[in-house]
Image 1 (tube, helix red, strand yellow):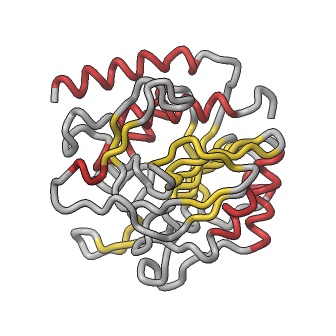
Image 2 (cartoon, rainbow, N blue to C red):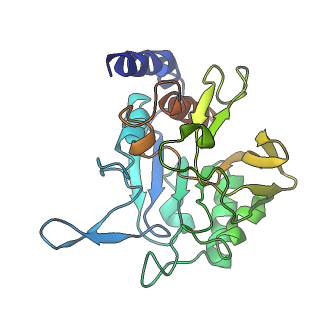
Length: 266
C-alpha cells in the first residue's frame, strides 16, 4: 500500500506542470443522462450510483475525479440530454456505460438530434470521451449513432473475460513510447467491447487485430474511445489489483492528454 501511494504522489507531481499551462477555468462534464442507474441504500432509499463523481465505493469515479482536480480541471455533471446551450461551458464531456432496459426502467437512448449536437460541439473544439462496456452491461444500437459519426463502431462483444482473480486474463501491455500512455506499461481492462473503425478514427492501441482504443480528430475537437469504463475506483485505488497493473498511472496520463487536446481558446 505504501508503494502505491508513493506511486500516486509521483504521478501527480509528474503531471502538475500540465496544470500550469495556458488553459484556465477548464471544465470536465460527466454525463448523468445516458448513465442513470439507481439502487437502494442502507435506509432503503433510492440513490444514484455507478460511475459517478462523488461515489467512493468501488463502482464510483471519485479517484479519477481527484486526478482532474489535481490538474486544475473543474468537475461538472449533465443530467439532461445534451444541447448546444448546456454543453457550451464544457471543455471535456465524458459519457460512460449507457443504460440498458435491465439497468434502468426508462433508459435514455442516444437520439439522432443529440448525436448531431455532440458532433457539432466536438467539431468546434470539444474533447469527447466515450467509455462503453461489454455486451452484457451497456447499450449499443442507439449509442453507435453517436460514435459512428466519428468513425467508431462499438462491436458489443466481451473481450478479456476474467475468472476470479486471474488478473492476466485482463492484462494489456501498452508500448513504453505510447502517444498517450508513455511509460505506463501494464494495465488491466476486463470484459470490454472492441471497436471497428474507419476515418477519421484511428487505432491508438490494438490487441492483434482487435481495436481496443481509438482516437478521432474532427474539426478542432478530439474523441477518445475505449469499450470499458476502466478507470472506476475498483481498478485505480490500489486496493484490489496487484501493483504491476498501472491503471492509476494510465488514468493520470489520459487526463493530462485530454487537457492538452482542448484548444487554447474555446
